[in-house]
Image 1: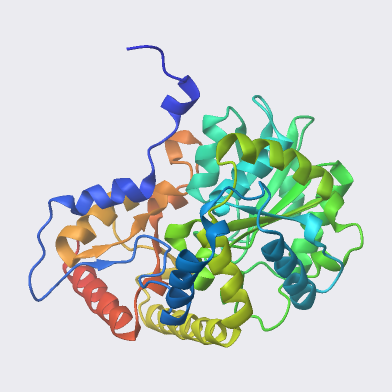
Image 2: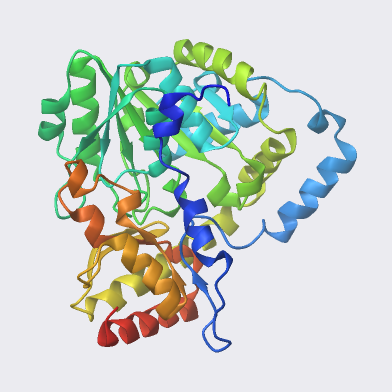
Length: 398
């Protein structure tokens, strides 16, 4: 075989695909079907009104089937800018918005404008595994930042990690995998740190539509010079159930987006025409529907909080948006626990070993002690079933 890129070979396999392999050949009792809480994705297709609009687009809009602008549909870029001005305040213009093929691509494009092999980017842990994977496969060091018992990162600790080759700090709020929502003053403190040190602050707000706080979750865009430091990432996948259509966004300076355009043109040429038009239709017509989706997710969040509050053997470290992040009570590593839960409880969740360094890699032990529960995939009955099954294995042991 011809040679393989050593950075790619050294990158760990896709965690969700690994977890799916745990259930490929499994059979589950008829009275205990699989409860899949592994992937952070809506379990249902887009609402019927949006699907009908998409069908109409396919039939009547020839441009939806053609190449489009590399940085995205102009109408969608303008709509994002306008809605962001309404939601966050401050000045945001269409030329500060680029549309991408999903938020993972938005992250990859942003990193491509910032860093090269031998540089480093700071990731709070637990980190989102695809961020770590992209940095690893491009030869950029993922410099991990420990977080406190509430899973919140400390700007002072981050400052100690910055050196001449640091290019950015990445924050995700609401967090994946931890679920925590970063307070506005903390976000501002990281912005100030990054500006002072001449590096970028990347804020991934994939789950912003399900934030528990009413109103703007931060005031970063109110700063008139926000785009000298801030790069915001967003996904339409969760808001409008468009996961299979791959539509995301980068909000950044026009100067940076000119570089993003080069990268995107070499990777995908343009985002999907149907997905972009579906996202635009959703923004124009589904605001009330999305507000209802948010309330349902918040109800599920409250149910997870309440359930773990009366189960002292389990510790809920973070909970929000789509995720609960818990410390398990078993004397086994989280990857063993996650596999055992498939066999013993017909529950699929992801282990903390997928979201942070192991002890043997310099970790604190949190990765081995924790599990991520994608609770937004379960309704009230599903969450009740989860707790019933956790109670059974807690009493019996694994």
